[in-house]
Picture 1 (tube, rainbow, N blue to C red):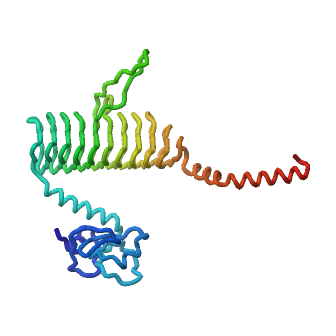
Picture 2: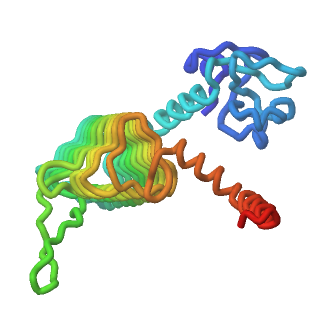
Picture 3: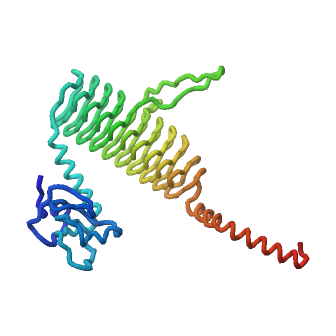
Length: 345
């Protein structure tokens, strides 16, 4: 598909500088883009490619001042990165709209229902009383258990497993290999040293505008719900345990693990490989640095790092002091030598 620069500028509310008849049919990185492709400049590290790129159209911040003429047609916007993301989303939406219908072979229970413009890929399984909203895309080899509800405009990528009784809101994307609603890790220790399984009879509730990366696992609640609130974004390879609650617009990077019954507030940011113990709370706006081990609750807005995690600013001061230890040791030895010469030691 070919898109004129005027249409692109309209979508991102930008101003065109250059050839008003320029067109593009694909995307490319600024340093590799070819004629007929669209790219963007947001990171100053790539500024040099602005003057050499072969891209036909380039999105750029409206405040950027050119140091020399450019060959490409520019679209100036307040925020180039956001505008480019908007375009990619629009392009993806157009591509997704071309998918519709039910591929064979697939299994759809007689009691399952789905809305308009739904796509159900080959080898998908929809259990009893499943409900799928309008414009939702279920890719091949997806398993959807009994009594699962999925809203409108969702994308469920290949190999996703959604266990019974779980609910998924509107505009949710779940990437390949993710498992929603597997049993929480609940085992009661017995007198003989064995462990008795605690049945996990709750579910997982995913609200609107959530995105979940590949191979992430979200356990169902023991009782009640494990909840992912609206706007939360989860990376690949994350473990969310039973009865956890992730607040609105919180983001969690890859390989993080959240233990059971922990409550994470709104706008929280958790770095990769962080580990968080169970039954604690992370206040709104809290930040957890990568590879941190969080063993107690965090106040709203506070940033922590390290294992065990502690105040981020204090940790930086400690690191600065640690780097100076060899020099401090040398100075102490010099002082001891002088004091010995003076007969003070």
